[in-house]
Image (cartoon, rainbow, N blue to C red; front, side, top):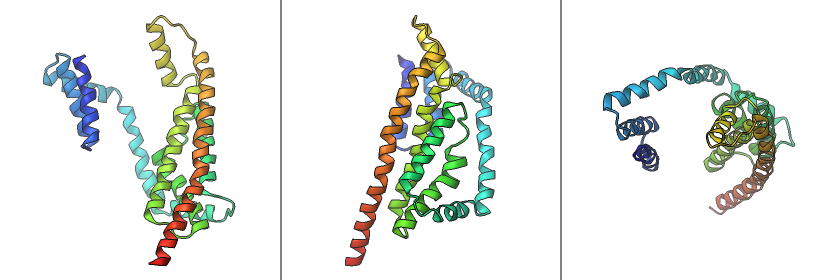
Length: 230
């Protein structure tokens, strides 16, 4: 049970808002020491795990490409595209992205979206432009709320959509854990039972996204009223 001290380090570190990399590194060292490793052995194990999974760092190669595209006006183009669609609202646009993201994840295309390559350069600016079309210039609070909603739509859609795909890591992890406890299931069974959960996630979060339009309208109307009185 002492090895769980690493989890406590992660929780405390995030609560007091220490840099995540420092928190994770400290948690790894504490876990190693709690398991009876020396300090050198714990750091060596952390380095070996990083080296064995270094392909995860390939995602950082996307960032310079996205930066160059944004410098060339990618966000402005996305805003201009949405501004020509008069029926577009923030909630409807994010709901459409949610469904596309969930369906693509369900067939294994988990890299089709993402915060760095899709939400920040395209989806968030388009959602902001849809709100600006209806309400005019947005205050920072509304702009940040829209960006958070765009990121949440990507997270929720991917989380509940990817389990429908047979060869995803989460399905294989669940299958392995159940087999260790004497429960034999096929990946197809797990995938089928993930469909109702994904549908429920679509209904619940889709409702939240549609209600986002109402919330923005109410908050922006209240802000305009306050500005007029001032």
